[in-house]
Length: 412
Ligand code: LLP
Image 1 (cartoon, helix red, strand yellow):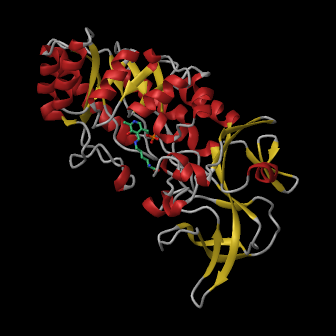
Image 2 (cartoon, protein in one colour):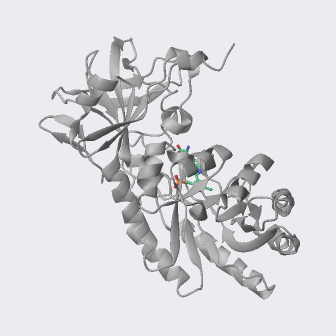
Image 3 (tube, rainbow, N blue to C red):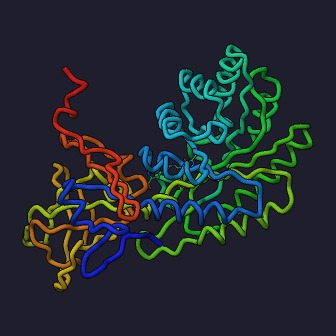
């Protein structure tokens, strides 16, 4: 459920017509709905009310400060993967005691900044990282709380680029080597193992792989307990999918019920790192048709948003629903919706049945709130889009449109 609805024949973002936003801020334009963000966060977080838990929104999905502030105001913690994301989370006023730090390549300066900020814990992905973390913490006179990221070798049945919990992936440590890593963490002076971490992939549309991973982790946890290592946190990562097209992902409620049942009365605080399920359907990308073009084999709608604005269709062949901002009731034709970038891979949709829109008309690309703007670039020297947050009738320019001066500002 989201708050992008048609009223009186045109698309609204909450109580504001999308065309009004475009008149003021131009295209391409990312538009987010604050009510949807709050609704999704609450639906997800409350699904775990039966367990001690902390929901750490995964900043990488959408790291705009206005989005982070909206979620922090709901009590969200944050899952970060870089010094930049730490900086953003702190700037948004997130309580450092609710921040977990994941990622395979944490640099020394980033580790130091996170220790200084006093984050809740580090999700450690290698023994080299344990050594480095211990050394830095010792130098700072601190002890870092750590979970080790276990790779449970579970197939999440999602796109290969966003599967992370298979043996062949670079993430975490395989179960066999993880016991030794915990023993090492127990020995090292600057770290204390307090939890177990795992993240198996993104856009999962079934609960079964999560339960399979959880099962392996709980067995692993018993071995740790037998070694005298007590863990009180269990971080299951993110990954719950959303509906882009015809997928039928489980509702967070079902996810919560399944985990609550599996964890029973174990003395654990569950940490979750949802990204897409919170922001994915809370954002659209609005674009204007520039030209239409007919070749002997295809009809094209050339729009002013390209793969630099939304790379998901090009990179993962992913589906995003596209609809007219002001539907005109024309019959559908089969088209490719393509951007202005000089690559054949620059498309938002291929072989899609859409009304034959005319140049100057607006299209809305749905489910663009997650991994949309955060993966945008300046390729082809295109200034990045503006981001707008709508809350009821209130409109906030969450990020102004980049200018040509911005494009060259750091160069000489
Ligand atoms: N935690 C960790 C350790 C992660 O690596 C990720 C996502 C998340 C949480 C959040 O996962 P989510 O709840 O959003 O599925 N760019 C791709 C998705 C990459 C996901 C990377 N890791 C896409 O556009 O589909």
